[in-house]
Image 1 (tube, one colour):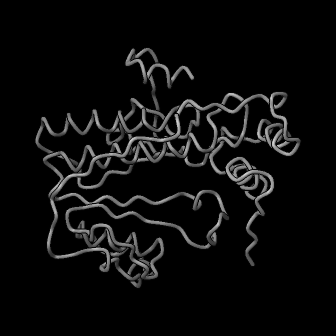
Image 2 (cartoon, one colour):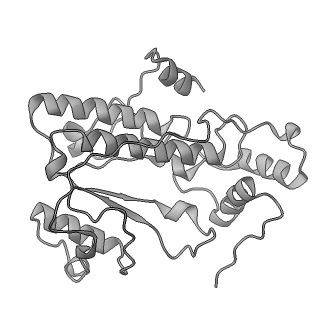
Length: 259
């Protein structure tokens, strides 16, 4: 909670540092933040990005391509002293909203397009088939308040970004991908976005196992404490996703089974 308290109080006592694994990315990376660390709220990562965005505004220039990592929708399961899955999803949602709000109020908004996708479609099955995921496309030239049901995949996303940047395909897979033309319109809407406040408090913390009365939820907390949460995508997917499901839906809601 030290990171969260520091962010809430604006005391700036915790200093985040990171370094890219690929050395050539070092001059192009924001180092005053942290990558995959579920103890660091995503709103802190968003705040670091927004601070850099304002610096770019002061210079009057912005990179052609920016990659932003907001990892907390992976959640820490029900491990003691971690935020609850609901709180971490709320943190992730709010952080994305903060980023969209900041960009849409900036001078770069008329020429910016954001693509937001989930890693691992929230780590597997939920009430909708895990073979799908969502992609949010945000720009003055995207269709507002519409759900596009055209079948796209990850290479469609890559191809669309390549077309926007004027880059050739990298290989035959993205060359043959369907661009996401259906998401866009020729008539722009430059009105900005305002982030929606979180409903779930972001400091809602998982209790210790001995404080949990339900035997199954207590066991989930014990198992969560043994999972390799410090490593990205290292948890057994089926076990982890059932823990998250029960934490949000209760132990009596049937877990969705898909072929």
